[in-house]
Image 1 (cartoon, rainbow, N blue to C red):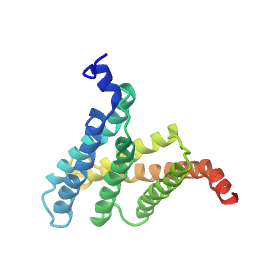
Image 2: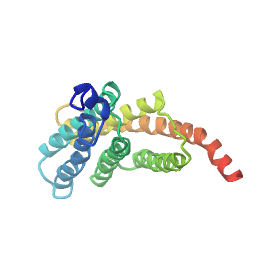
Image 3: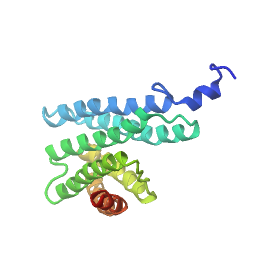
Length: 207
């Protein structure tokens, strides 16, 4: 079978495989999304920028599903993809939450929900990095996937925020409720990850 065979290429993964290109697109979407929200929030730009930001966010969120799906279906796994995929997700959500807090879409007690989500992402990333050094993998649970889905939907509603409220009342409120739901799931899944890794941490200290 020659190196030009499409099946061989598909299984090879590689820097410029389709799943990786989708992940790169998600990384590029972060500054574009930040620019839209920055102009709208800081410089009080047109409310239409919320819809542009929402469109970018939805497109990026869709790639989050398809890059993993295609990598598994086509066996195009790569080291750079495994590294960038979770980073892109955390950048996307973290940057948006900061801007939503800055413009008051998220305020008061709801700031705690946002802080729980951000804190969990940092803690789990640190735990995964440490366990990777021990060659221990912590699989993503089904509940964690649901957490991510609820979190993305919540952030989408909150990006629309005041622009959405002008069309349908309660868009921002729906986003806040979903954000709290995501925060609760975040606490549980974060504890689940820590419990899964705690045994390895204790074993390492006792050596």
